[in-house]
Amino acid sequence: YSHRSIYLHSMQVNMAQSMGLTDQDTTLVVVPQFHVNAWGLPHATFMSGVNMLMPDRFLQPAPLAEMIESERPTHAAAVPTIWQGLLAELTAKPRDVSSLTQVTIGGSACPPSLMTAFDELGMSVCHAWGMTETSPLGTVARPPAHAVGTDEEFAYRLTQGRFPAGVEARLTGPGGERLPWDGESAGELEVRGPWIAGAYYGGAGAEPLRPADKFSPDGWLKTGDVGTISPDGFLTLTDRAKDVIKSGGEWISSVDLENALMSHPDVAEAAVVAVPDEKWGERPLATVVLREGSTADFASLRAFLAAEGKIAKWQLPERWTIVEAVPKTSVGKFDKKVLRRQYAEGGLDVTQL
Image (cartoon, rainbow, N blue to C red):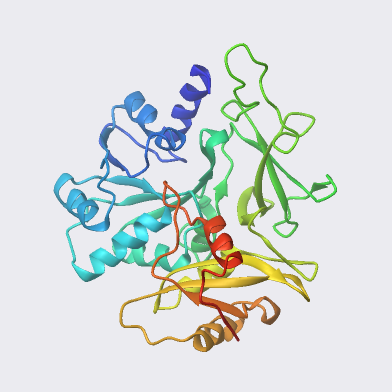
């Protein structure tokens, strides 16, 4: 990062079409500063005079609910797993969280069921996408004016959002070909801009590092995210390139499977990973955390996915396992490499339907 890139990024964070923060707001930053500078919020808040709350190590649902009730933040930012825990806490023990009207969710896709539940609590969820190399703001899902108040609005909110003026984007196919913004052609997202990394730090006196797997020959950052872009510039990510399931020559989105599973009332968390398969190369393994008292079984969960065309029949997982909690990284994202290792080592009790 440079001083200039951080300054420009802070200005974008405060734009009305981004987080729209002013000196009348208090933001609860449930993101550690070592994780992309807490999404750039500490710099942005100092720029515009926003009050900032940082919960230190007290990231559990109960202390967060108590902080919201007592300190009355108007905005908060965190990954989906934080908000899923808070929703369960507020369901079990309601608090007055009416001050919190805007919630920014990033780091991984927000399940539609979580967005709907927060809407019912009066908290408007705004999806955003970014990564360490983008400082991190890359897109924000503010629906366009013509969609507000219509049936289209929710669909726009479920996307990762539109690119701001400071971020250029393109999609690249497996052979390096440029793909159209038609909402259907899926490829790897590449970006560039004034707060997008152009290289990695090589150490004192060393040359900047521009590895070929991270940067295109003409300097675009390869994000490792796979998705589509609509004609009006809204990004929808279908998976990380490393997490997409390549089954019989076709791609299966682990994110789509996870979101569909987490819309089941008995499922608290769900993570899906690719595992080796002799016939198809890879197949999905569904790792599920059931809610307390649930009697759901794997067959009923699979039938739920198949119902009403939620998931195509050929994409339905055959392998299932129940865990107490999905492994997570230090910033609260699902740690799928741990699940893949546990499966490879025989550490999961897997049922095959």
